[in-house]
Image (cartoon, rainbow, N blue to C red; front, side, top):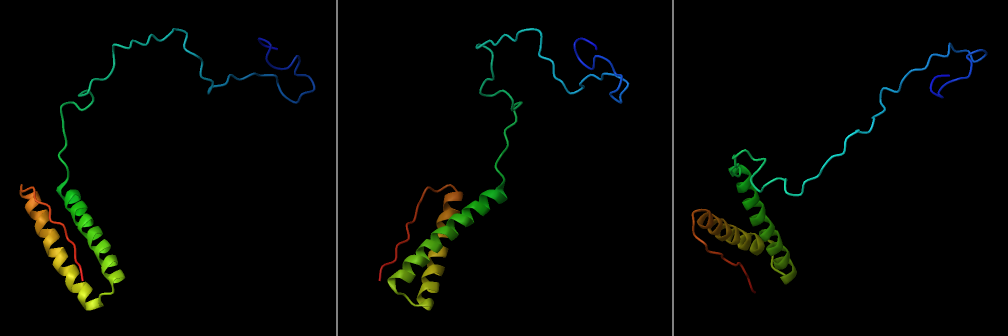
Length: 120
């Protein structure tokens, strides 16, 4: 027996009585950690002065997705109002052109928003 661990005697146990240490046992730290509330991360720490610009492809995809979402909502409204398929496709093309023009002018620096509303 070693430090109260193991067999009293290895006789009759089928082992030689050798005791291994647990290699995966994490011993607690002996010193106390002092937490200082004054030290912490500042707002600009961790970036190393590097700010990434947004990816143009991702911004373009998001803009197109927003346009498509507005067109789907418009299409649902037109179907509920009883328009024919030809009229719906015609109005959707008009709305797509106006939305893309509005998005292009907004990307160019203009702050204009065009609301699309069709009534029968």
